Image (cartoon, rainbow, N blue to C red; front, side, top):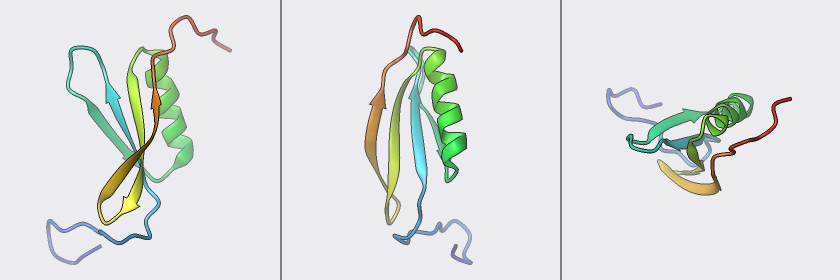
Length: 79
């Protein structure tokens, strides 16, 4: 990370994931993490509650690319 305030790390060697969570009638929420286990937890929790989600992966230099899109899973059996 840069020592200057307001500047983030824009190098290509970062493995980071982002979820864009969309609820009907609300602004999208963005969740960013490097932890895949936490990512899956937030993903399944929000899908079970009826959100649409785009999973994005860090492509380097502050750019994210969409890797998967998920639709709400209504009526899914709970384990």
